[in-house]
Length: 295
Image (cartoon, rainbow, N blue to C red; front, side, top):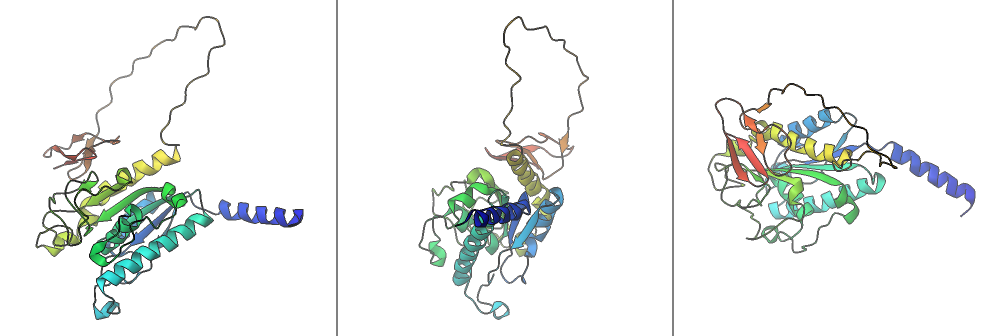
């Protein structure tokens, strides 16, 4: 290859990278929702608003459970197609924008396909026997946060569970399963949900964007800000080259009023840097080591 060709290739690559966003969000809708983000939409939009210049992309898959309105594709085939679509779209984007930070937001079946694609382990409920993570290793490193809402793969006891459910969904992970990226995930499920839990209120299943939307945004914002700032690492001052260190004066500042968290908001957990005191009428209740909530 000539020097001119190499120069043009390098220039084209540099130009493409210059157009890449700092943050890109992938969203996947629930079963039978029309093409788009479905009920995951409000969460996707809140992230885009919080990070100006960020972009988003719909995972293109059937989102079906055998209904004629979505082509009569079986639930199992829809899940397998969804996992394949996530791998294809995420890997393709990452190859074009390798430095962009990625976020996943999936609702119901959309949460299940992100769960399968990001955590691996296969999905015997739907006939997915391959236990490997289909997302490339390079893309995996760029995923900084994943939000699953009403995920049927829910099982109790996982570190990233948020909500009141203490049972399993209709397509549960096997007992003892651990996702290698657990610290990047929050999965929302309440006891009354008949799909991610064993309840009987379908309205609960459709309400997570309203109930936990602000909590999800806070989690994503914290993860992305840490990544953007280089993992939250601190720098030290210049090293002395000799001689005595001059004395430093200390200036006291008045204590600032402590911030409070609204009811249903996050108030604690490993890595949490937000308010730890709940607003009047609610108490900070620990769900697990990673999450406490004002209830």
